[in-house]
Length: 285
Image (cartoon, rainbow, N blue to C red):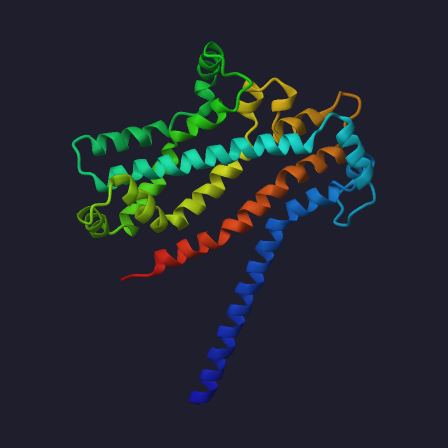
């Protein structure tokens, strides 16, 4: 009787595990499907795309590439501009937000909590609400058609400061900082050599979000950049729509595919740090 019950429980456990695996595979395929359709449509012509959905590639990739290049779409220039802006934004946002979060956690000063409350309240203000004033200010100081207005504001990133602060509260041991100070380490040296390596999972996680958000950003670059040699990839893809009589959908999907490829590379390079961060958060001393 005991063996029968044990076999039944084992079979039920295996059945539940198989169901979970199948459900996870289904979710993975469901997540990959939009990207696959985008890559497939990059190989199809406009009439084929308008005819309906297809999961099999076609033979119009070279034609779409000719149309793409013929519409003044310069993938190399767009890639370099987007990479400069996204990389600069990511570095500024991650480093200075981590530095701010470190000051909010380690130092005990009078206005620490009011400042943190103020930073959280800034998250409630949408970017679009300040776009007009920001553009006027950039125009007055002559920073239009420059990458600086798209990079330097990332120094103040309230959402990242909030995330980093919450991460440091659980991951940073204050005794390590005190030991470094006793050994004569300066504050910046302690932060750069000790605190930043501890925060590496959180840094990688936020770096992915910041890089992807900056790479796909169309609103502010479209307002500030008017010279073709300064266009980013999203602006170039936006200009592929053509006139009201004819729009090459295949070339648009090809442009979107070229825009998305670097994001896959960034994600696969940093995804292991996200897994490490999840594992680190599950370990209790």
